[in-house]
Image (cartoon, rainbow, N blue to C red; front, side):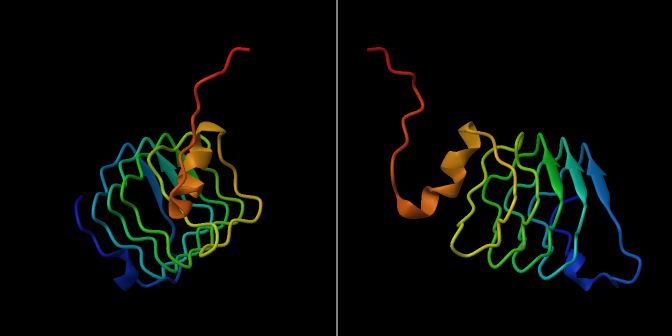
Length: 121
């Protein structure tokens, strides 16, 4: 499913779970997706601008090029997600979960280099 525009869905009773899906280029602009599960799903170039993704789970998802702009990501779980870039100054991240390796995706905005290779002394 490529390029779907979920923002036009009637939100009354709207509930999703995406397992082993390809949703590249989809738009969830301003959609309420609380507690939505994305599992083994490809979400490249997806627009999550102004979404409410409170308590959403991104389990082994590829978020390369996904847009998070003024998105509510409180309590969202990104621990096994890859390739995301999220600006912590422009999105709500309170109690969101990230892996140590994924922290680099929170620092892209600052244009800094993070070396994750272990150092020996």
